[in-house]
Image 1 (cartoon, rainbow, N blue to C red):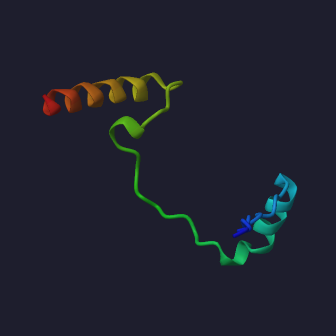
Image 2: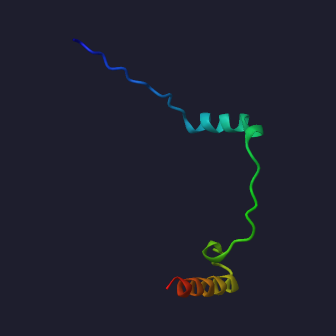
Image 3: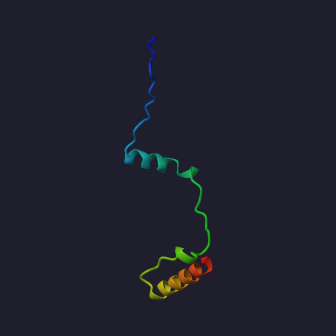
Length: 67
């Protein structure tokens, strides 16, 4: 018996084509979800000294609770 193998080929899109499709279907996209303010290690405002210190304190506190 001579069996033939079927290969499915997916289309290949360029970045420009994908962006165009996204822009066309923008009305179908959901809005952003507000999850509230950043907490713990989510805070990454490293250029702000106070935010950095608060982040380090929160990290140390979280680490102690985990142990």
